[in-house]
Amino acid sequence: MRRVMCFAAIILPIAAGLVAASPPAFACYGDVLGDHCYTEAVMQHPAYNYEGGQATITPHCLYQTDPVPLESFMTQELWVFTDNTIVDPGGPQWYWVESGAMDDGSDPGLQYRWFWANYYPGASQIYVHYNGPSVSMDTDYTTQILYVGSNEWDVFVEVNGGGFTQYGTAYYNPPYSVEMHAGTEYTLQENQAQGRDVGKATSLQYQRTDDTWGDWWGTYPKLHGTYQYVTATLPSDTEIDWQSNNC
Image (cartoon, rainbow, N blue to C red; front, side):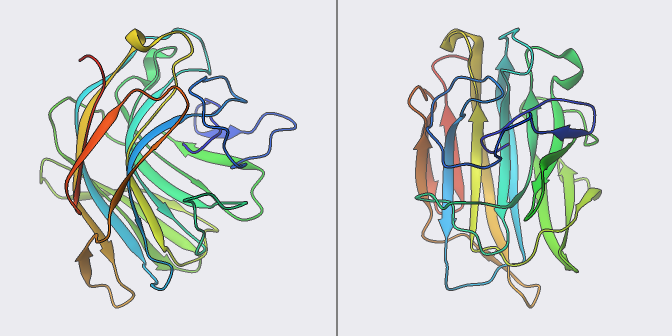
């Protein structure tokens, strides 16, 4: 979840006075007002209009033991940025729909859960939902985020090729997407030993406005965060692998 994270059951209000999606300072301190770290593959094509994205997320380690409530979490996920917003190297405001696996060391109820979330123009909060499947290690989770018209994006997940299930609809996010990211986001309030983050995102694809699909191209790695410690390799334009210090 970009920049701001507040945990609640389904909808997460932003703390009073907090401006969502503000330009990042990029530290790994995980308090509600802090910034987060990212190890990502980025595809950005401002001259194109995309109506969807896909990634197969395969967690190998997703382990966050920091017990500080509201301050520490780890995700492995896909982000589809909407309303033609440009994120890298950093615009004044971003809107997105995201879908991925999460571990939150402070809340057993959010351990190994699939979530999706969105932030849209005019929103006063980030909307986060934890109604996806439970997450197991070394399992393939293919997620699709697809524009369906009327500023709505449907979120799907498929587990080990067993067929897609829709887990929600993100409202009020205008088209189109010109930038997508895949990878991991994490915070560590205490020390690196409390986080174990190893996985990969493969089959990175975009959906065109005629509903046909294509492979990501021009993909490049982006590591954000003063204290980030998860390294990445890009075997191809359609895959990113990441590795923390331990597993």
